[in-house]
Amino acid sequence: RKEVEQDPGPFNVPEGATVAFNCTYSNSASQSFFWYRQDCRKEPKLLMSVYSSGNEDGRFTAQLNRASQYISLLIRDSKLSDSATYLCVVSNSGYSTLTFGKGTMLLVSP
Amino acid sequence: ETGVTQTPRHLVMGMTNKKSLKCEQHLGHNAMYWYKQSAKKPLELMFVYNFKEQTENNSVPSRFSPECPNSSHLFLHLHTLQPEDSALYLCASSPETGPDTQYFGPGTRLTVL
Image (cartoon, rainbow over the protein chains, first blue to last red):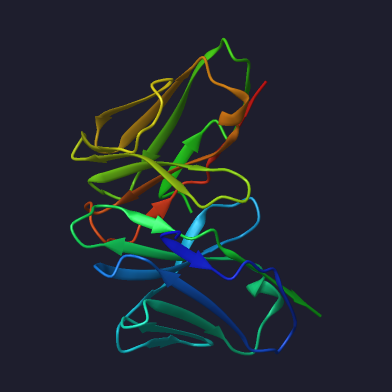
């Protein structure tokens, strides 16, 4: 089983749509969780951290279910500028590093 | 943004060449990282440095040789690479190692002929 698995994508949605990305992780000892965004031919950038209680930042909502080892990202009212690849990232307890999923590409069309 | 810079941005080299990638961070961070990003694969961690000391080598072939002269600079020396080493090489930094947010440089797009 891959350490961090994401929906394969791509997701093609019209502007204004709501889209949800799913991610599962294999290590139950994982402690920290993030969503990064990577634009085409650019570097990854932190979108938001994911907390156990769930957290929201404008149109973006992240949720964590530790029992199911599942993380989600919801984007409401999609904009053209949301088109990018979204990377699910997990940090394991006792390790100094981050483990990245392959990413899910989102294409928002007019 | 100029927090983490990388040079060169693009590099084409032959299998017998020797080249170096450079990374510099202006964020006052103590940890620096090298990642490899190949098409259709997740980012693969290669090396981790914390306070100039290498703390992790993720089973990287010896044809990749990192160097960290200080907390702000990180190099990746390349020699006798293979075509399958063609990828985007990303440098990142964070305040410390651990579950910290990492800040990435723009990457070096490497092609090995």
